[in-house]
Length: 450
Ligand SMILES: *Cc1c(COP(=O)(O)O)cnc(C)c1O
Ligand code: SF4
Image (cartoon, rainbow, N blue to C red; front, side, top):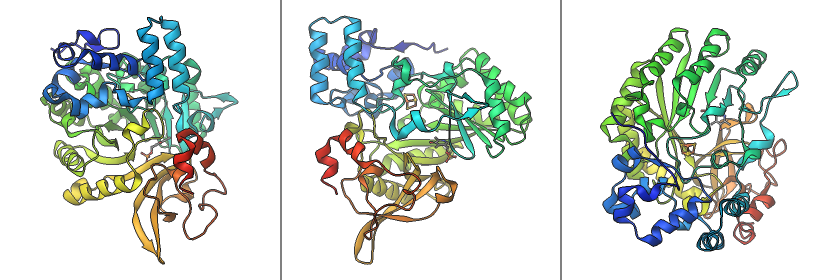
């Protein structure tokens, strides 16, 4: 029986592999960066996913342990100086929060734009952006079994309360679902909702089942538990009860869907994850998989092709490849849009049709999920061809549109309309704020494009 052991800044120096392999300087780097970006690992990740003989290049090591270059040099220095000077917690926190505010913690207008209302009460733990699917952030699910260094959800983990989404009231959600009959899906997200004990999760799910809402067809879980702690479905004391809960939902006619985050094929290889996937599927759930494409982690077609292939063999359905978001340590992870598309295309060509359920690369941007279909030449102009996979306005979906080719573009706000148009077709309804984005990314870099 594997017992969950969590590692944070407080105890990471006790990890035997950290003691054996890292220099003191590297341990200090973890401390400096880990004071700003969230850091948490566990015994499964450390013992079964990371190749410590090659840790500097190991994708799962980079995915979970903070790296010096994830902070700008001046931010790194500021925190390092404070730590060397023996600064105390409150002071470290002030410095960390100041740096975090400069890292665009809530991209794509998440905080302000998407909070719905029912009977004049704001559903603060809910986001409803795309017509069919509402997101729910249960307050007990705002953490994970381990933290990804690229994560854009990190304001939720580092105690910046004013930025936190969260809510308890299932009653309001049920009211909202009844009042919005076009919503078919509720997506539990976080953090990781499957960090919650089954007992708590059950109170939410059973309330939804018992409410018998005719339009509610699918309950989804955005989760990394299969990647970071598959024991959640095999060995944990309440694993069986969780699977029974899925079965119960299915019997009530509700489809249970995992949106499982897997970032690298290494996560598909352990016996524990294979067993966990088998048990979840056996309970009648479907597992769809997704990940961003990130420099230093999975920015090569072989990794993706292997990951999709493995997933399909295990019974999962490849679903989305995302572009890394414009927040946090983005300079460290960013992959240019053109390169992301080339990686996608090359990987997609390597797998058979059964794995080509995946779509991407896609940016979850303010107006919607925008897919890069490719780089083409139209009427003598080199362009990106794009389309919405999801749109704030459903009418935008699956309508190709064109942006001027820009080899350095890493996000939608780096793109300008092609063929002399003054704006993209959707900008009348939802303009892109390029100036703001440029300020954020360092004006010189982004403005050079126009
Ligand atoms: C991705 C996403 C969804 C779900 O989209 P699907 O394409 O249906 O998987 C829902 N809401 C938000 C805000 C999203 O980003
Ligand atoms: S598992 Fe998901 S929510 Fe948790 S740290 Fe990783 S990316 Fe963020």
